[in-house]
Length: 55
Image (cartoon, rainbow, N blue to C red):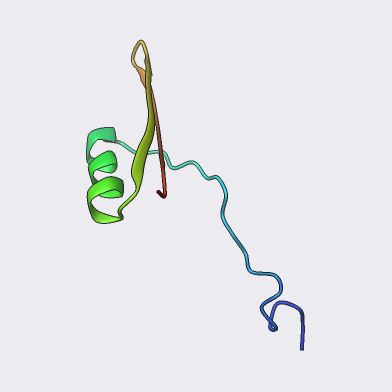
């Protein structure tokens, strides 16, 4: 039996990036459907950076 099988090494995702075509729809999906909270919303000209997280 490996350490993973014994539950000693549970994998956790700490950070990931997802590129989307429509940020308004993506924000609505992640917050309303999946229950994430909007953490940051920055714009720089035509570019926008959204950050969501749990809690």
